[in-house]
Length: 167
Image (cartoon, rainbow, N blue to C red; front, side):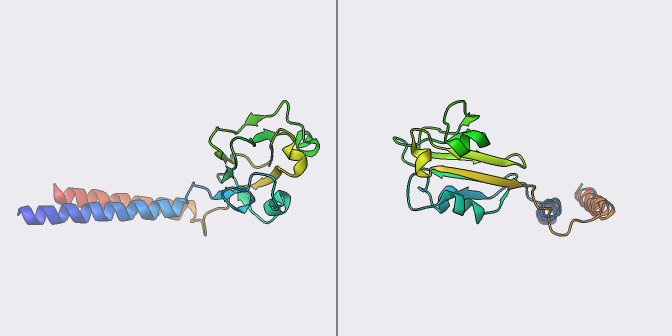
């Protein structure tokens, strides 16, 4: 009797995990992609990397992240408006992203163009990047609300039935 109860519990837990994974897949994954600015872990600094060209070849979505890797003793990361970006103005910035370690991340939370630069004259050397953020892609083929409700209801009914059998 004890072995049967243990096997039922294992099956119940296994089926519950499978249902959670299935429901999560149907609803999509909210985590985003990490983009290393400039293409490597240390590209935030004057170099042979054209950051404008790099960003034009990347696709950014709401929920994605930017990783800025740089020499913390020389550079910083400031979010600025379009005018400040175009003219390399490092005063009255929107946000100082710099955390002090030279390894900073920034979450892209809105559909818009974000502008970043480094102060100290480095912007004039090309240390700036604009990132155009798009709406997130919907999960591949999204089920209709009826089928999602039916799938969820069926899963819930199966779970309740299994719990009833165990008890």
